[in-house]
Length: 278
Ligand code: AMP
Ligand code: MG
Image (cartoon, rainbow, N blue to C red):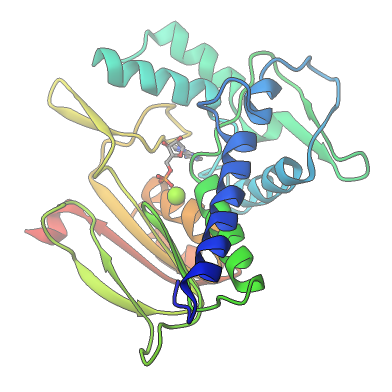
């Protein structure tokens, strides 16, 4: 965050981090007490009133699920739980267990009602995982918080999701190095401002079983991690768009760029497979 006065900027960045904490406290599926985790215990068919923040996140996620034909699915909770067990044990889930988890997952099995700000689940054992969208969503809120405090020349770096405000002083934009398959090198350097850039792939999270690498990105069609070595970078107007769509690009594969580029807010989509590096 570029500022003339350090103290004021520090106060503003603290407020931005508090914003991220709010999103985490509400939408994390790692925290058992989060509003999102609590939803897993909701009775089928009974509406649950949500905070405005979680309602908006779920509504945004539902729209994305629809637009991507379910390649992005916010309700893969039962399957990501299995993936985490698979990573810990290095063993694929039992067929029957996988079938049950797949049955419980699916974005068509919940409905949102904006008039009562509520969600209704239609299947037993449903749970949500907003891991592919909440970080970008939080980055947008953080940038907004800094801008409203007067600090527009700011950058939020949330791992693979980067949200950029106005360029730093006397620069054309922020320099963002993109890494996909190799931590020791970057594939390219982007110069951007007032945009978001997200990269997804298996660089940081995967598990190898019998010589096959399973990514933490799940193919909703199989319920298992992607086995194709693919990574994607999406540049968009906001991180709540670039974050999930980078994940979607990996699910849909190399040819998805044309389709994704047409979605609102998307500026650029770059999909790479591991062979590109050789
Ligand atoms: P990202 O790092 O943004 O690509 O998001 C990956 C995370 O999103 C995973 O760790 C899961 O928690 C979740 N996830 C995996 N596959 C999907 C999917 N197809 N749709 C929505 N979320 C997913
Ligand atoms: Mg993402």
